Length: 442
Ligand code: LLP
Image (cartoon, rainbow, N blue to C red; front, top):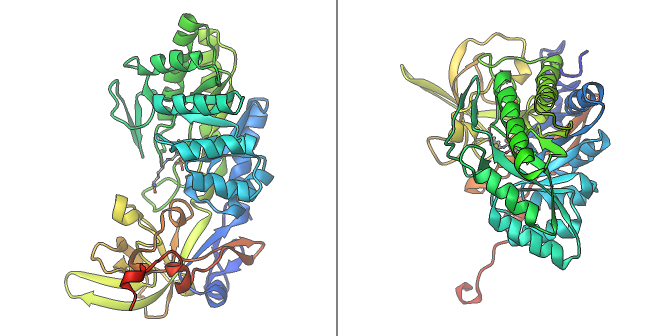
């Protein structure tokens, strides 16, 4: 079996993920439950790592964009596959450090890193900051000076390529809180500014053009813009980038409106980026830089599913049928935030064909709390098990305790066996930070 074919229907007609029967998983761990297939995660990490090894002499590093799914086990897996990590907060950094992740392979992102986060990351001796403001550069330089060190940094630039799922636009006046535009001179100013900082060492540039992108050309155009910028800077300042970080953003399958990309397809994305870097370096007589990429969604997205139990069912004649589950926007806010589309399967009757169009409703006290509308499903009954697919990225990591619901636990499946990687919350966990001031006490 291809490691990325994580889902199948077994003889009992149950959905399996990574060889584990979803009905058994629900029995053993309860629902709602996030389930991740370790083999899938590792296979995607290897696709990127091996492409850099084989097509670029290993002169690069894959950084797992841990915002997609951050927990200690994920950093352990990424480390064991030889990846680095991209973190965007003190909390993600703390989780990585707690998991024993090598600090020198951590890249710290964010448009407004807090002074406390900057100090903490310096104390951890992380590999690189991706600088995204002059304020950050000043503070970082001062704090590095205090510690008697020189900190490696990349500058986040904005190449003016706006990518959307299946399209892209090039724009010279990008309105974004991230990065410095290569078109309006601010990126150049920042390079000059950073080169003057005694306690910062500029390694090169970073750019991330968006997420859930299928259009290869948008990545390639971004590379062209970055290298064109690098060439101009070299001419004016004599500075040549030692590293170029091309961000993440490769798309994944959620529904049949999306392409189902085979492993070879992800290799092709990266190959196209690598070829473009080589071409541009030749064109501008630049030395080949170290290539960094930061995939998140494509590593964990399709590796994960969420299991739910069906509760109330409400059929509003002529209007809509609501099938309510024991989860909702607190474990997956992506429909509410982005009207994201998902595929649902009845995991205990997975061989049955869909016969109905339903809306999958959460249990929160809010009408908009849906996982999706007009989803295809066989006729669901109370007690059925629903699996929502491709929920590995930006689900757990964006979950909340809204309505004081418990964030579901997560299990990792390896060779058909599941173990917790995020333990279940309890009601006691919910009140652990609550304080009743003395004067309010009876
Ligand atoms: N690098 C940087 C600097 C990023 O900002 C991101 C994602 C990535 C890498 C990883 O991109 P990926 O390979 O996962 O597409 N919450 C949204 C997605 C936000 C993405 C933010 N940045 C969602 O649920 O769709």
